[in-house]
Image (cartoon, rainbow, N blue to C red):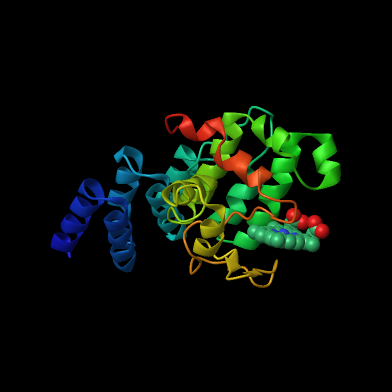
Length: 230
Ligand code: MD9
């Protein structure tokens, strides 16, 4: 067991994101053993958000009172810093995502984007691309990091952007790749979307295509994604 812990620790600190997530899965079977080590790694390792969030989730699910109080101490708002230039409270989104309540989190994400856009968009219930272009970088990054952290790096606008760039910015291929459309048939909201981690990469968060691509185009081209990650 000590040998296994040592080898998992090596895997957690030295390899790629996929192998790190695999190591976390293996480690979860040994827990609560390894909890202290994982807490230490969470503070020191340079992990992608998907790995950090999974490690954080595993630690919060432990009964251990000392680890719990250390987490509350270190990360009172969760693993992702909840930065907002507009004074929005991202704690409710953090809670839903931490508990993998992806459908409620998706609804709330749209609400938050409307709040970011202002009173007219809140009343309208949907966005103009010109409003999206004005979104502050910290807010968009906070939302994206929350989705990444609590989906093992599977969900988030930055994931959708990466896939879309990989497809030569072809929207039609993106819809198929992330299961928003199958052949000629658009996926129907909400029942036909996949609200768990069995979804393909980039499936969530949703952007309604009823009014065309302008909004998602503005989201995936936002200047937030050309910044260094923070
Ligand atoms: C992805 C093509 C998340 C008629 C709910 C949030 C909203 O209303 C009914 C509401 C309305 O505005 C919602 C989400 C999505 N849709 C809806 C997501 C989504 C994705 C791809 C598509 N949609 C594509 C698509 C096409 C036509 C429509 N949609 C029509 C439609 C209608 C409603 C919704 N969609 C809601 Mg969809 O009238 O934004």
